Amino acid sequence: MNKKVLVLAGSPRKGGNSDLLCDEFIRGARESGCIAEKIYMQDLKISPCRACYGCRGTGSCVQKDNMAELLDKMIDADVIVLATPVYFYSMDGQMKTMIDRTLPRYTEIENKDFYFIATAAAGAGAIKRTADALRGFTDCLPGAKVRGVIYGSGVYQKGEVRRTDAFRQAFTAGQSL
Image (cartoon, rainbow, N blue to C red; front, side, top):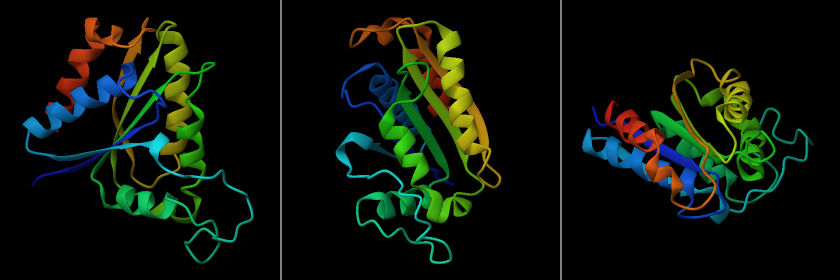
C-alpha cells in the first residue's frame, strides 16, 4: 500500500534547515513508494483559535480560512510530519496556531504515525523540549504513534543542517515507511 505522507513545514523560512530536512524526508518516502505532500504553513491563512466553541457539536470552525482544508488532509493522511524551527525552546507560532485549530475535528486525526523534525542553533536539550510540546498534541489524538524525532541541533545559518547526521536521518526515516 502506498502510504499518504503529509509534511507540515512550520518554518517561515523556505530553504531553511527544517525545510531541508522535510525535503530529505520526502525524498526517502517517495523512494519507498509513498505519496508525499509538503505544505508550508506560512503560505496558509490560519487564524488563532478564538475559544468560542462554535465548533462544538458541528465539527466545523466558525472562522473561514485554510484550516478546514488542512484538517481534511490531516485526517486523510497515514503519516504526518510536524517540522518546526525551535524558537525560545518551543515550536514556532505557525505550528502552534495550526495545532490549536485542529479542535473541531482533532479526534478524527486518529491512528496516524507521526514524525517530528526540529532544528535549532542550540543543542539537543532545547529541541527535546520542543518535541515534548509536540507530543502534547499527539497525546490527545486517538491511536497516534510518534515513530521518530529528528533533531537538527547546532544549526543556525541556512543549509548548515546538510552537514549533520540529521540530514541522513531524515532521508532514512522517510525511506523506512
